[in-house]
Image (cartoon, rainbow, N blue to C red; front, top):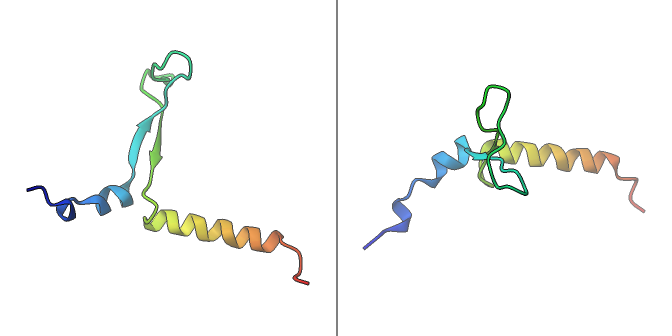
Length: 69
């Protein structure tokens, strides 16, 4: 029987996974000047980098908010 708990999802969540960008009409990969696929690295929602970025965005939003009434 397959044990889902034995999957190592934390490593990929922390390192991220490169996701290729596809052309919206043709579905073919978009290539850079060197002919390599353009990618975006997707981090897991619980990765340390993600938590730091979300915290910074929340602090920035709180700084833009006016005083409480």
